[in-house]
Length: 116
Image (cartoon, rainbow, N blue to C red; front, side, top):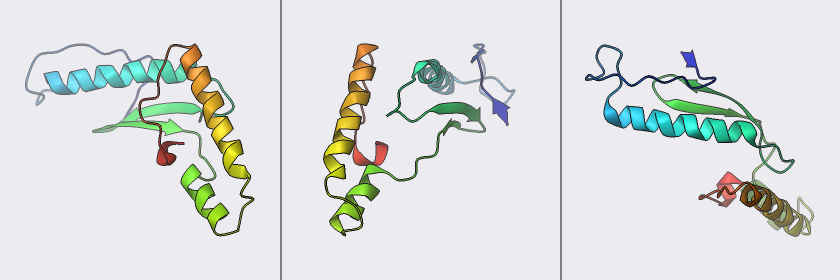
């Protein structure tokens, strides 16, 4: 298992059998490295904190653990186990996080309940 920090990536030609990366894997790794650089910059109370990354046959992000998703909160409110007014508060938090991202000229591209 290799831990990625500063994402020092070297282009090698080959079929991947000798430890080199084929073109598709290399492009995916470059995109992953770019995402890591962006995630390291983010600092907002309503954005999950980035802890690190691992490359072990696939790219994995290590993020702060969230107690519940928006989907869980909505279900709890619908079942009477949570204040229904929490919904607008959560929506305001999401909006503040998106405004922060946009202030950095970034777009989330996959805003949905499972990712919030």
